[in-house]
Length: 497
Image (cartoon, rainbow, N blue to C red; front, side, top):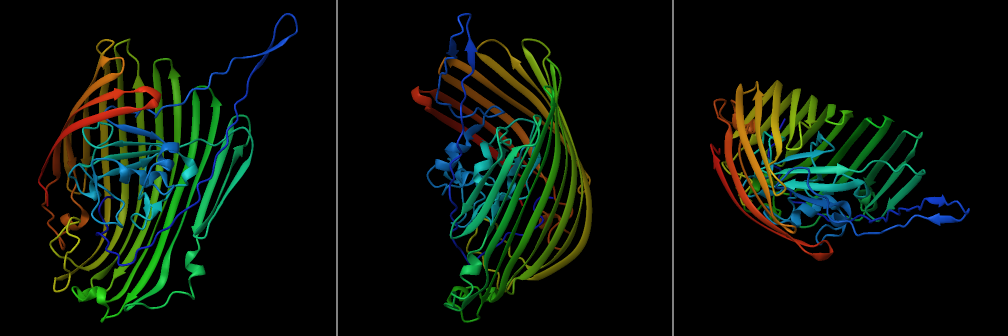
């Protein structure tokens, strides 16, 4: 349930770095014998692999290797999104970007076809995924297809690799900040798995070393942990079952004295500031190839999130929510010209919300917002909700140079009782063997945040925010895997709160 927790403001910052471990892969030649009994080896051609193509048009794809080595990533592949153009960050501690004019909370995140509750520990410290498991990363900044709906910002799609199947292996990651382990390998010829976990322990090392300074006492140094697991079973060439699960937890607490220098302009921040949040998600995905013309991907998922915190005299919150989802995507091949796709997702969830906060009239883009003197509001609610989204799209290969992607998205939910049909369109045209022109257009609608639609904090009659995206791009492929891509975009946002 998006936007149920108010924006967090932290006075404590720290830097966490993790070791980057090398993953070694072996390439084997296949030996063949000729009629003279002489063993010959097949010719092996080693080519440098380029960046992965995004699954949808108008996107950007990058491999895990590139993500880890990119400047500014600190060895954390998901943080590389901070180095990409079109991203804006409200402050140095915020890892969630404002994408092409939309707010940081207007983006959608998923990993391996399943939604992800949050991508970063403490809103930017480091990602919740083991760096060695990230296979690729795709970002769609605007004008994305009907596969994604419900947001007006960007879409971030993380793909985690499958377990290694050649042998069992264990990878340890130990540094001054954290310790982690990754275990993976085959179970049978058709089954494999990996388990990864890590936890920080810098708080234990610094427990007796940190003293109160400038009126700020650290009661709980930022502590985090996370885990990922994947089990893959391939009973036949046409079927694959994947059980995947992941989770994360964050804890921190500081105490700010009333005479602390940092609260002179906003005294209400004096007192205890703490955050405890966690999420746990599980999903089962079935990939089925019915025949040469039909492939089906089906997922059932469950997620649970627990967040509670306090911000000095500003107030406190406690939010729990649980969500179930059924998602399906089917791709057809009608003929040489048309590859249509359809998809549907049913979601049902519930949330327990307790909020007591001083709420000023400002947004994420007002880092100097003053809370002192604002009105204290409180609410306690139990919420049940359900939603349905669906899409249809055609990959229309008009000729060898031109491909069109017309589509239509649908979304419906029962909290505000709203339904929307959203047209989407994209095209790609090959001007030459190494130059592509792309363009896209789409309409998008997004539900207001909980605080904005709540009867106490906001307006229960508030309408959806909506946006129109349009963009045109030119990409030129150069030698040695290099390419240059330039895009011009237009975004109109309406019904903003």
